[in-house]
Image 1 (cartoon, rainbow, N blue to C red):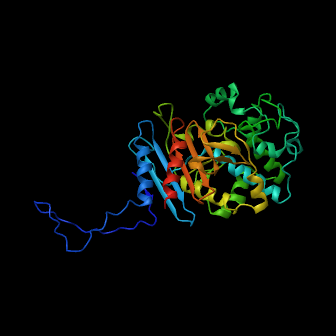
Image 2 (cartoon, rainbow, N blue to C red):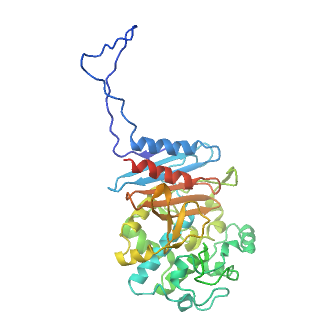
Length: 378
């Protein structure tokens, strides 16, 4: 079952014209029949999402578009569990879109003078094995730090499987950081380790938990209620069944695999839905989260690592993309149980979010730009 919000759909009536056996036009003399009504942008968006859901490798999708004037279009299609459709209030793993929120907390604290973007990480966290003490918070935010990705440590998956109910803490996860991949500041390489550490920095600078910081600084001021960090708080709504594997044919109840979910923490741990993610992205990129000076800092771009489709560069807690010959800001997310992409189109002011309840073969890098292309024609 699909649920949707349709915005601005206008029905147009046409004139019926009958032709006789000889093909003579019997419409009133001098009256030209109007052309059939063009498909609305909203119906084209809906059709595109439904087309995605009919793909043999696809399961469920939650999609949202916010136009420049603030009007919203929301659609879900495909399946949650076998025989049950994905609903618009279902929560799925948004994965690394989490980084935009952790980054925003750090940028707010920098704006307030509670910390500096060029502070060394050791100022806040002391000495950590395999973490260069001189790496700056800015280098953590834009992935120029050279840190190994803690999620690539071979022992982590072993410990996840050993106890599905275990809640990993950030302090535990720091223990899975391997030696550096390269010297800080020499190139860009995406790593979850950056944002695991940034969550700890935010906690050290404020004395508050990262979940309280999300709620108090971001979610409550913006009215975002359909979002949560598993293992640290209760779900505020139904969590969708997820699908694992390639093809995605293993049905999974996410909250029964809490050890897997909690390795994400402040790097890629959050669950939400498309309308919430789209509202967040619009707020972040239109200056509702911090002032223009810090927004400019966020949009200082370094070259992309080159491993993400459509990506053009990395800012502070965000990624840039170059779809449709333009520029978009946002972030993608990929996890074993969820895939996502958030785009804010700098040219049109349109925000697009797509979330899938599957980890592989989701094609989110194809669907989101297509929805943006359709929305631009409005």
